[in-house]
Length: 149
Image (cartoon, rainbow, N blue to C red; front, side, top):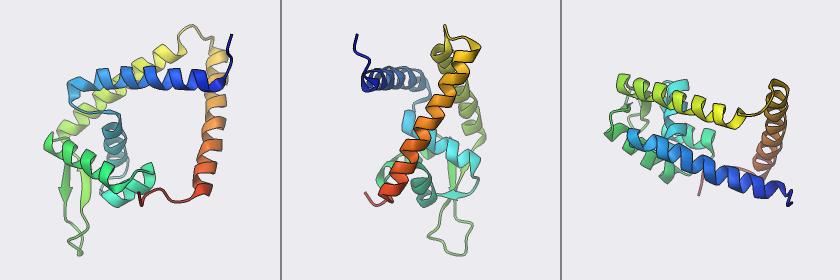
């Protein structure tokens, strides 16, 4: 049996993406849009550039998501600053409803991930993933800023 971690990571990523995108289709959004709406909700009045930094995404990708989410009525843009070039973003009431549906999708996903794992195994899985995530985050941070793609 092949025990390569990458085999499992690639399979997990593929199936995760399929599941998420299939479930998000009814909301007319994709996985990248979820990250954007989540960050706007957590940081009321955030700018697109700040989202790029937080998500380590390029400006074009974030701009497409923002444009789509705004067209769907899930977020709104405002110019509240003295500098009218700075646009701030907020989640709308409709967007809050969508966010709750997204949370349900991720709760369902967690149930799938943890199925057949004992409480101790679930705890260990989360702890190990947290360590691996931190290692990758530290390394990607060391490599530098990704927002100028």
